[in-house]
Image 1: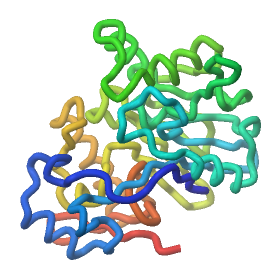
Image 2 (image 1 turned 180 degrees about the horizontal axis):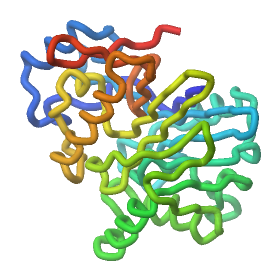
Image 3 (image 1 turned 90 degrees about the horizontal axis):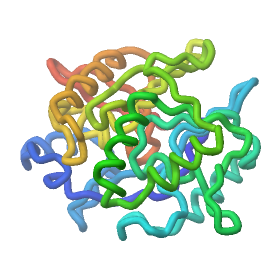
Length: 281
């Protein structure tokens, strides 16, 4: 697995991101976490925007595609995208080498590099790939956009999802879809109605690519904190707790989309609660 980073660093005020958060709870969790998860000068939690490239003997699989280089996005998403391109190319692959793109959900920061502008047209960035998209997630946003128009973050559904469908590159799947014996999807609704995890199992190594079921390691310590960005905050708690319980005290690696630092880690139980240990490799 190769992480392809688009942006990292301070991003959100924890008390704005997690409305239930208190200073005591935040401080207690930060005491058990590495310094890179929080930026004291800004008072913001640190987050990473990234894709995950899985290279197997049979396939090159890309999980989530960040914000992309589209310009009509809200200001906070218009940071330089050169790093993503450099890290993607540095992994030794080209756009044409990707066989599958998994979208854990269809928010703006998970679909951006699905498409790019070529000669004035939006075309699939990965011309040989099949884009695996949850049917429930797609149908929800199709209806939402028909009723409300583009999201406040920018028209990412119109620019990064619909062109994939129109090009015949999308594969709409149920939330128990299995690609092969290495990778399958499992439902994790709440942040969005149809969010899915990508579950990976190879040679005894298990990993859960959890999308935005967790945004920051603070939520490992406080799993009842849903973000202001969650569509159904109560359901998000149910999904998050299931993921933590499935990972706790096992060898299963937890890989959320936005965790800072090395991102990857293991969940452990600490009394009646959970804690997180980042992978140091």
